[in-house]
Amino acid sequence: MKINNLTANENVMITENVGCISVLEHKRNLSVNVAEAGAQYFASQMGIRRRQALITLQNSDFVISAGAMQWTAGNVSMTANVKGVGDLFGKMISGKVTGESGVKPRYTGNGYLMLEPTYKHLLIERVEDWGGGIVVDDGLFLGSEGTVKHAVVARSNFSSAIAGGEGLFNLSLEGQGLVLLESASPRTELVEIILEGEEMRIDGNYAIAWSKSLDFRVEKSGKSLIGSAISGEGLVNVYRGHGRILMMPLK
Image (cartoon, rainbow, N blue to C red):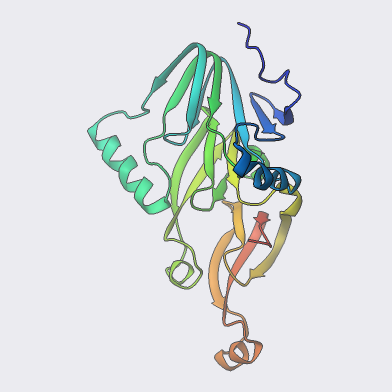
């Protein structure tokens, strides 16, 4: 199969290529009229550009968020990844509580899968590098290799949901394989923290992904209510144990 004017295009560059995932970035948006040209030019200068993920399938499968597919080429088939009525109901419930699409299409075969363009930044993570699994913030998941298992994890305490600016449940990605995430900030602005039995306190929901092995709770910033009031921080998100945290400080 041959596809012309895609990657061999002076206006398109591949910013990352890991395994089956290639991230394409359109340097300029040329499909604009005169009135839009100025705004689009300065947006491009600031790095606000459209990005797409091109998935190469080689007798493999890839799971994506519902509605994320733009086109496929080759011997590629799609299944709804639902085993029955009970499984459908369970996926719908998990989608509601995690903020993700419950039923995620699975594309299988040999060929290409192109995802819809987005102005957000695309991050590629390897699940096994996160020690047992990666928990992602709502709306961050875009796709994953078929070898990655999806699960719903609940907060260890209700206070983490009520006071921590997070939901009661999150999507957990476990096993082995690549995961594609959609971030509002580029990787250059993200801060990665590796905990080795320590703890980290964050004032706000700036953590967008963390190791499943970490214990996440919401606690007072000080040892007492008076101390918390004096510090002006009140309640903070606390992560303890061994694992990684990916934080978006300019969120």
